[in-house]
Amino acid sequence: MTTTVTAMEVVSRFRRSPSAQTIYQNWLASEHKRHVVSVVMRHEARTVLALETEEILQVCKTTTHALGNVKRSQISSVHSIRDWHAPFATMHVLHFITEHLGKLPTWEEFRAAAQQPPFSDMTWTPARDAIKEAIRRGSAPDDARGAMRWRIGNFYYSFLREQYVQAVLRDIGVPVRQHPLADALFRVDCWAGDTNIDLYIGNPLYRKEKEGRKLQARRFLNDSRPPFRTCGLELCTQHIFGEVHLPGRDVIQRAAEQISQQRRQ
Figure 1 (cartoon, one colour):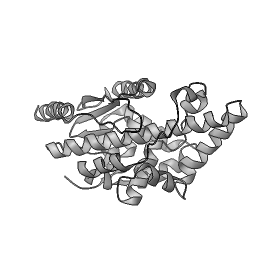
Figure 2: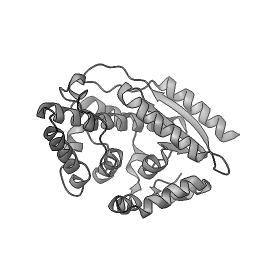
Figure 3: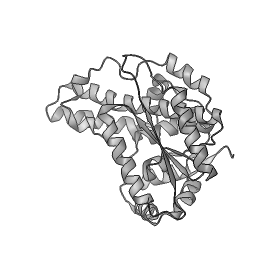
Figure 4: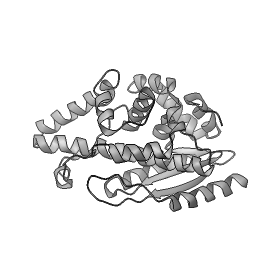
């Protein structure tokens, strides 16, 4: 298995789906996404393919809690931030910063990098503008800031869990690959051969959003020839404040067996 995934590899893989090709061409032509396109198409996924489980576990043990002291009740009324998206998906920026640092960042390292060019224009500035707009519309400043930390912090935790699952799959012998283009545009978290792997985070606030993206992906990828296979893996988490909770290896082992069986068919 090669140690790098390029955007063009992703484009080539999904070329078998006419619908995916239409989505890709529309994305390329979007004036709103012009800067996003240029950055994503240059991105090479390398560090994320080499992350080891112990490295990820160490980050989970040492990182500052990404949600801080934010209470769920604080974000319930700030809908504009609870459902906020910047032109650059937060998962894009997490990938970019990981490659820039050459390692999986702690929450503190991610925040520090996100405030510096070129990443600040991707996340930090749009987030700050969204907070100001929420306050202008009547939200309490603490609630607006807390809602944004909750939003981005949950994306950060999702990224940790997804990288952990993929590292364990590699340990087991499943050659998973990933790239932010596949995630953001084709709604595929990672893949192994012809199997697309859907990772669902067990967070009730974002499960519907995540599942909606996956159902959409399955619909437009249904026209793929030859067809793709799909393996779904829900990453159920406990809710204990201040700790990162990862799925058990037994859950990942069952998914690995399903993927391996599909690859043999």
